[in-house]
Length: 142
Image 1: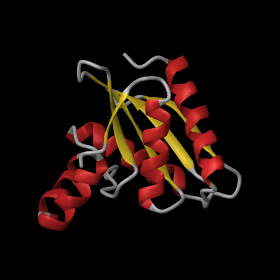
Image 2 (image 1 turned 45 degrees about the vertical axis):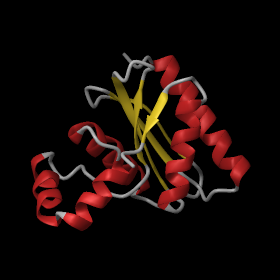
Image 3 (image 1 turned 180 degrees about the vertical axis):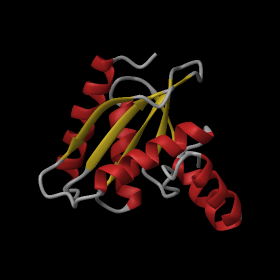
Image 4 (image 1 turned 180 degrees about the horizontal axis):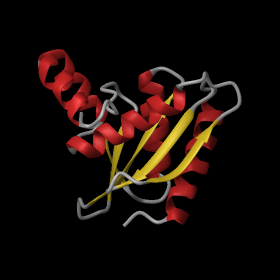
């Protein structure tokens, strides 16, 4: 189970990585394996809907059990499936990199982090850094 303390630490370390790397302002959503929101932050200067995009990256990853990099590939290869899946999960699925599953050392799904604000690759890099900072395994779906 992903604890609130873990989610808050991941959030703080993700923000530190983004700042150190010079990324644009980010919105960061962290959810547990049930899809319940554990932590959220939107840096000063993010645009209005970045939070919803970040949550869609995280939620879509948990809903389908794949990091959003894999969902992006599926959107390119099987667009009708992703369209249907987006509808099935109530529209909260954003199939671009930046949604990363969090697993423990045994591979058990603990939750996901979704980030939006910079390039998708930078969003994903920040997520990976935050997850790794507490010893969990990042699963991008690559």
